[in-house]
Image 1: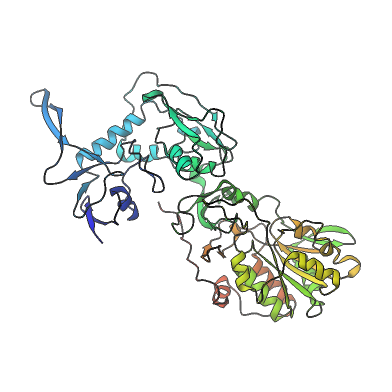
Image 2 (image 1 turned 90 degrees about the vertical axis):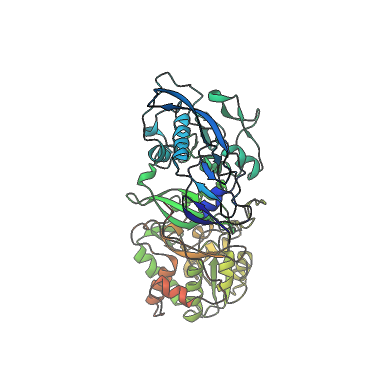
Length: 537
């Protein structure tokens, strides 16, 4: 592979790479604002100016101060070029840290901060703001301007999810380019010129598509803020764990941002993966973090005589074991979960076949949602493929389960997850289980849903933010996610909970740790890519 030198370091590049992209691939950051690896080149912020030394360098005439003569004299300086726009060439000599390049970065930074409000203490971007980062690395000087800064509109509502502060905006145009090039909804534009320009929404429109939160994410400063995250948390208190979005079968890679003090997740951000989601996520996917804490099942539930009573987790485990212990072989229906991890589904299948003699398998999944040709897959389940691959046979539908219950072919159910692609009325046969001592429906769930409402025994389990696991997306790509926060109380992941129930019934599998489960999982599952430990600095 061809290389060029950047500040004396060899940097390999691919055909079509610009200097900044090649450096970015190697983990070398050339200061920038408007450049983004997933967007077209604008070259308008001028923060990435570098010195390129060739045999016949371009030079600009300037007036330079001469300390000896105490006057300005004619001189020249190298013509700097934007690293985001210049194509990399073999044996090129590039300097991003030369005297002239560093001076240009300092001047650009000072220019961008001339009218910028000093409201870092109340800005949501504080702690992850490029203006702050580059002030420390490229300026570290106080403002010289003593006149009143130019004032612009603040708190402008762009749509249902985004608020805009024009005074903080540096006109990098990332948001404009994202809407036009990725979201395919060119609703944003820039008006006026110089220090009076600002981002505006097209007349009669608002920023309201399936990717509005990404306009906030690509903003390098605090100009665009999410209504959901606005004033909720300080980023320096947040830690990040690698996750996989549960919104659909695309399996977008995420960073799960959580506050370890409260064991609470505050947001999801896209994690770069060129083969899956590139640099993006949809709004619904970014908001799936709410299910980690809302409508949670945090205690066991047992239906007795038509009434549902909350019990401790330990009592729920005992009730589940008692309900499953007397089921006749061949009469038990096992419902896999397309929302659950491959590890959870695998242990469910193994427990049901090895110890309970189950032969009937079904699949519970969320109903289809609106897909698109950007990221959103019509299948609203992150692990349908993984559940199908651990199933011993092609699982039947919940509609077929209801029919089997009505016919008497099934007298008990063990289900994983709370979601269903049928109505609660369709699940009425499941709700009748356990009435008057007739059979039982044992459900392991994270959130309340149709299957929990139809269960006679509900055992709480950990969410994907509270456990580690694997999802297989619609393309057959297996991806791992890592535990971010602790589950409430003594709640455990579903695979661990199933082993606990099994031991109460005398099942003693050679599974004690997650690594044991992964080692025992069938080879039909694709090899999972290991999740990174933490986001890059």
